[in-house]
Figure (cartoon, rainbow, N blue to C red):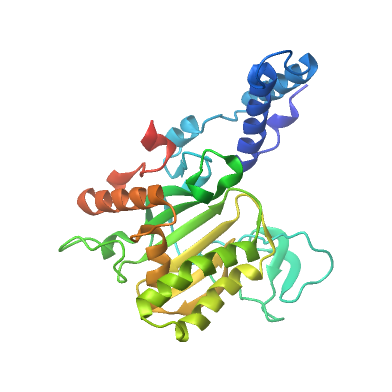
Length: 323
């Protein structure tokens, strides 16, 4: 009889979760607990059998084979979360399926552009998700990194999200190389959640990080920036639980605005050059939240300027670049 795994496609994050968990469990049962008899033989056999079944279904551990076969997609080194090498704004909407029952203001359960799921209802105060996707210029991936609590990316629970920087190549070509912080550079940051987290928790984290940066940029303890930051964090507070693989985009096309997309749906658009500068400074400024992210972004940006974006694939911070 044919294996059930051979008929149902399995998403990359699910493959990583299943195989990573089985691999860690097998290691523990094989002696990772520090001596003595190490777990039950039956459990070990079951996990090895499951791993063999996944392998027979064509699921690759480590991601390197898949990465080399599909140049349009690369994988972050720590989590193997995937990043397309090119995107366009606005992105393709995806269903925002949450764990609520019944109705929720601003959302409706229906068939949408990405299948059946909860979508913002434009007729009841929600955001209009029907804008045609990919109408903006193509943006190229220049670098990828991992945001971890206390910089401890070796601890699974400390991993918050993977992040990639995308730029429009023509906005950095010609003349002197502009810094990545240049507000005229059309750029988008793509965040992919590495663990389940409440949107409100993410919003509070951004709030704590951005307040001192905005005060420094504007030279004001109070001002318009407070309302602009409130709109930015409100985008996350409305989301609820964000699953592993949930996508957030910060689109900054160079006109002083920043648009937040969550799972392909526009959540907020804020006209604020100061907020744009603060968000970029959060990752590539003098005190970045993740120093290795800054290094990968700056190295990739420099390579994209000097050699072109195509020559920068695979970009820094990906499995293929590390191999």
